[in-house]
Image 1 (cartoon, helix red, strand yellow):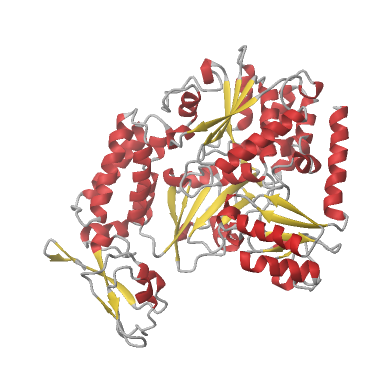
Image 2 (cartoon, rainbow, N blue to C red):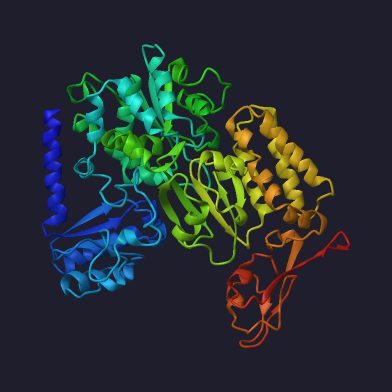
Length: 625
């Protein structure tokens, strides 16, 4: 322990020197979102510029701070001034920013996103006073985008592993009592109380016990676990060490998908570092506690997010669920007591140990304490990773934090493909496990997909059910066969082949699959169908009875035309039409050849004058209105 105290002091001195010595430091967001936006190319420009102008500067690669829509993010700290952030940096402007701000010492702060700090300087807002960030509470994301995820010393300097040190000074039952009092529930979707799960495993006698981190994030549009690992891997490892010590764990696994190469690389680097610093292995910090962690790369099966399927995968078996009880906390991996928590749950544990359960309970609402991360994607102005107290309303998340939608808002899908579609009338619903269940949805791992008026809910349900049907392990008949029949019905509705009784069949079959499936995948699979039927039944009726898609998405039901009175002849539609279906001279109304039109929607989406319309077409000799 004394040796680690010395390391903590050294790391704090190094961190202070990096941030407060007046040295020039350039921070670059290098999580997957930053890289996808071109951060690797920006990095090359930064290094070339530093060399070109002979700038004495250090480049620090950080993770994602959450504002993915602003990536690549480049922060600069120089001339004794606070760290200042620039968003959407490109190869073209990276050198200009560095030259003007560092070399020429020109005040270009007003072009920036603001200074790091609560209120900023020189009349600029603080970076965290931005609309997307000001209402967030950063607990598990505290270090994301701030520290170098590949440098354990940065993590230690920011209270890293202090929670582990504190835990090792306590008895396991004391820790379980604190975790239980904090009220943290599993952030993987089900919301089961973490303290109860840990206590069950702790009280089950066995010569071996396992701890598994479920990082198998398979929901379309969800990336919370990935960004947390890419931006702050040591928070996860510290949480795992605390959890393992508490339950009496002897072996640990991080189960993640092979499609997360950057996260895996940073995890492996972090594992090497904790071993080097004596924080993992035999007799950790002289406490007598020994623990090792291995990374298990899954093949990307969605069903392996279910804990018993995940266990089978680690054991080398096909990823298929089993009936419960016994629950994994009693009989899990290799038949031994096993605790499975997800990345966010484990990453939050160190903060509770450091600050205490009462501190954690100040966030959230009764029964839903603490914060929750969400990936905010879809037709939203500000996309990214957010962290808010549980109980925050959907309205606040979508409009105050996300900035709303360009076109009129229609609905939001919570909980991933197995979640529900919530309409605008219910935007004041608080984000709690119970409130979401009441409106026909789930919390899930935290994916939020925002939709506007151009989204067809029937097509949305078809997309999610098709995904789930393909990801079904096929073990139980209701899920294997039932989801296939649901998809077939939805496809016929979207293709204009529906019969009058299709909606009744769709609803009854969905309830059957929900009630009789073996695992959570099948039990929640019908949620997109049931929730859209509940709130958007009229849109289904239009598809079934009128053979028309009001969102102009289902191509079999519509044909596009040009409204001559609205068309200005700007030729934007001509430039994007892949088949040459739209023709006409500039400044004159255009023509659309329906025989050439492949209904790709490109013209409809690019038109600024609402001059492209979708009309019902003749199906089987009948005109649908």
